[in-house]
Length: 396
Image 1: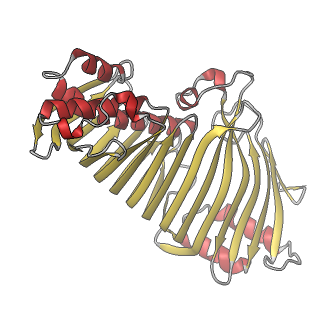
Image 2 (image 1 turned 30 degrees about the vertical axis):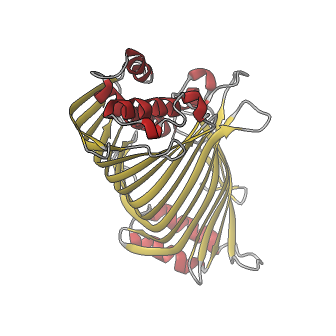
Image 3 (image 1 turned 90 degrees about the vertical axis):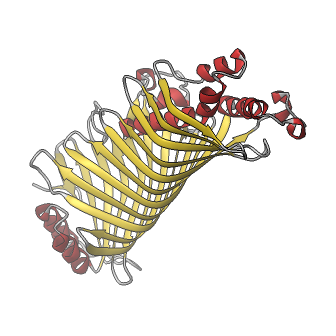
């Protein structure tokens, strides 16, 4: 999860750099050196930018072709991007791209038909020294310089929101034992930056394809419609630890094209462990600073999969469950079900889950009826290292 977030961070950083390319490409030959230096100062160390061709329209729209942003760690290719003029500095900066491709050694991303907006909060327009000058701007150079100063100030602003609408987003992630492919269709995405990070995604359809490469486990294709994802990255109140609260809702959940549940609802919280009492910043967490510890725990998990007449629920906490946590894995959870045979029959027929584990779980649930207003069966599932306990008794 941390590596995935780190990759997303680098992609977002590259995206913000793209916002600065209008000034970099056009003003290189016409703007004061101070503006050029300001733009170059916003490029991360080791990041390079090339632009193939630049063209502008009478309405001050600027289009580039063959934009490339690259470093030793990642590359971004944009066939064409249009930077739309800022009519008012109180309005967002607008960008449109037909396609953007990002890749590094573990992750690749391809997004098509993108409209993006950068909203800046807490920016004093008076500080730009161009208040009231719009009616005086008559030349392309003056307009570009004014917009350039605004974009630079926006990037440097401590608080900003990037909104991205995309027709399709495809992500491929190399996991230790599998390849994970995610496709998101017709999505609206919002990423807010200040001292914390907040992300919201609403998508018409989301598909996940998991292909294992270790010969163990089962491949699976999973999908959901009307998906709504929220997560944030912030420090626990009064503590140095960072946490990642997450909320996910999706409808019409299926596996291997077999309908499973009408609705999925997930709440969870990831937590970083650190032996240091040093308070880390957001950038240190996203770049994996060793002094800030690493994501190890998944807590307050509440997962419910439901249909009109049956349901499956998992709730609990997992400590040291992230890969390479470096500590003993401990899981304390409770699994509950309604119309258990019907639920697990669908899971088995989908062939997307290990049939042995699925059958064992169905058996122990059927052997553990409860008196509950909603669920009919319940078991406590605990893991300590390699030991698995069902209702406090060893599974094997």
